[in-house]
Image (cartoon, rainbow, N blue to C red; front, top):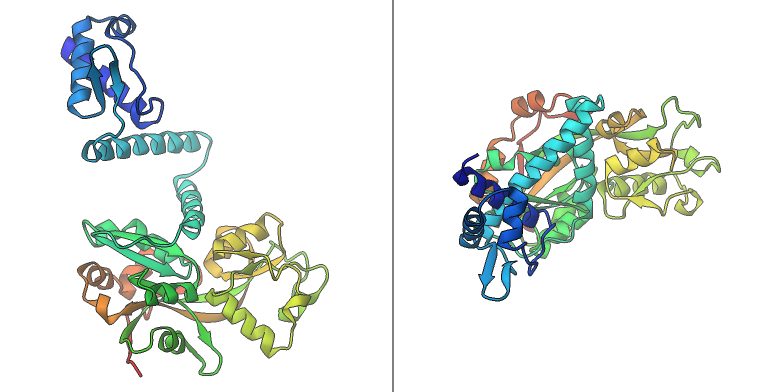
Length: 366
């Protein structure tokens, strides 16, 4: 290897150590003589590598202090390198899983489920940054897909997703912490989804309800239904443990309405007060034996191989105030919401109906 190639290799090696946290701000690099011995090269080659790192702002050399990692690396250089390191680690993980006999779809599904959990644990949205679209609201697998592909949908933009429940999404809109929300809130008095809640929580605003999908909701049970669960009344049985959703989620609102309608006291239900933040988290808890039954989407039950007893089809809408409706990134997003695209792209999702995808209902201020 010639000197030109070797100094670049030395610089790349040290760069990776810095970005992967092996070398920390203020750490001193080995002396030129020691580094030359390690790489079996001339001291001039090492000096050239250190000069290249200094030019990039990653190290600084001072007389009597040697060469040290700078306190802060330049963002414009560090960010691409960090992405490269991330891709390298992801490829290593993928190779390990494929070697272990897992298929690509199985690995992708596992990653999606892990991402699902972390989205639900994210902190509340910060003040908006440039080219960032903030979503808050109810958990949905299609929203995960939109976030993953958002840079293709709206180049140069980022969709930041925080799952916290339908009511939390509307509150985030009202408080300016989100630009759009996702909700499926059933109102028993009117027999409709979302509109009454939008009018209560966003009074005086003109708001668009854009249909994302109709979704099948039902009971998720361990395969074979070993507890012989038959329906709502069985929730009070001493051998049945519910895996519940958090207060404010559309699923919890629907369940509480059914319990009230049938006169079933929540305090008589084992597990009622123990909650999970997403449909997939509920399904996972049942699959792992931490509960016997829970309300989930059919798609989430299918992911974990659970039995599923359908109860109702619910409408999931994107809630967009008029003040945000004309944003370019939202226009780009809405342009992709059509039945043909989603029915073809997301055909594997059980229990989803995209025939109304993209339909818009405006809620006028009253």
